[in-house]
Every structure is written in C-alpha cells, then in structure tokens.
Length: 265
Image 1 (cartoon, rainbow, N blue to C red):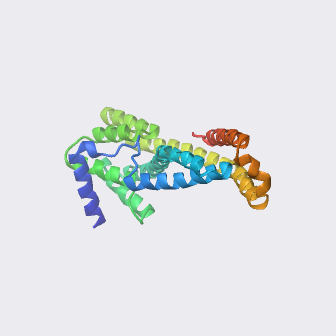
Image 2: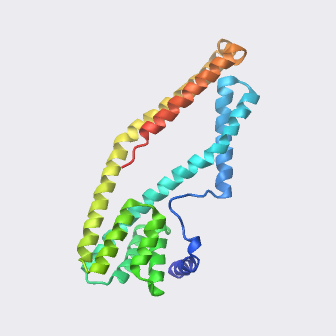
C-alpha cells in the first residue's frame, strides 16, 4: 500500500514540476511558526523579567520572538540537508551493489528504495521520495541524466551535484558506472565520517557553551530568590541601565559562542 501511495505522489510531483521540493529553503508551516512565536516569546519574556523585573520591558523583549522562526527554519533546513546527504550515501552503496551484480541502472534505483525502506521501516524520507520521482520519470521515458540533474539542482548539495555531473558524463561517454558509483560512495562516506568525528569532538564543548549561557540566568534567579533586597537597586533607576548593558553583553557572548561552535565540513 505504501509503495502505491508513494508512486502516486511521485507521479503528481512529476506532473507538477513547480511543486517539487526545494532543499535550499525550508518553509515553516503555520503551526510551526505559531509554536516558535509562543515558545520564543515566553523565553524572551522570562529573560527580560529576570533582568529587569518589569512587565513592560519584558513584553518589549518578547517581541523579539518574531525573529525566532527564521533561525528555527535554518536549523531544520540544516538537519534536513544532513539527513539527505547521509541517506544519499546509503543509497549509493545499494546502487553500487546492484550495478556490480549486473542489474541495470533503472533497477538499481528501484533496489535502492527497497534497501532504504529496510533501514527506515518506520516511514519514508526525502531521498526515498526523490528516488521514487526519478523512477517515475524513467517510466515516462525521461533520460536518467535529466532526472538526476534536476534533483541535484534542487538539492543544492555538493556531493549530489558532483555525482550527477560524473554520472551524466560517464553515461554519455560510456565509462565504468560501477567503478564511478563505488568510488563516489567511498569519498562521500569518508567525508561524512570526518564530519561525524568533528561533531563528536565538539559535542562536549557545545554542552559547556550551553551551560555557560544558562549560568547567568540561573545566578540571577538564585539571587532574586535568596536576596531580593540586595538585587532591588538593579530594577529601578540607573540599575535598569546597568541591567540593560549586562543583557547586551550576555546576548553578544551567546552569539559569539554559537558562531564559534558552528563548525561545518
């Protein structure tokens, strides 16, 4: 049943090219935007109230939640692209095995879908859908080179673009497809392994950075709960200016830590 539904979806996508997914952007749904605004507003309101103990200033800071959906969409886009790259590596392994066994390229893409389904039995992913679109285009008589190039243009992924270019050149010039797919999968695998090693190495530092960003807030909450009289001058008069400067410094430090930890391969 799932296979039939996927093929129907692939046919609808092929018949409507403008509706094919673009992996260079991520558009949040209305529900996702609402959750971002709600959660971001509550968090910013809490930070503002901890620093200033003023409802009005906290409400003004909560207005900054309008920028949260943009950053959340970037985060989800990165996760989607990383998953697409990982699944593409696994699909290349399957395609390489099928070609080495003497199967055609078209059957190799069909086998890759089945192999991915074994790895992800709980549901579909973007690459399985894209492979289904490619197979559907092949059934309509479209050359596989055009289908791969269209996928690489929408994916915006260097590995997928390089594979599509090499595959197209090899297909037209009569090169060794088996060796090309094998070497491409090996190179992408090495690149992903390096990326994962870097992620493991900086995971602890990212946790420490998050703890450092939370510590000033927890310290202020602790002081308000234990020594409210001592902190009261910071919530009126010149104390509000000092609290504002402290919040700016805190925001700048948090931004710098996020930028430093944003390492990509």
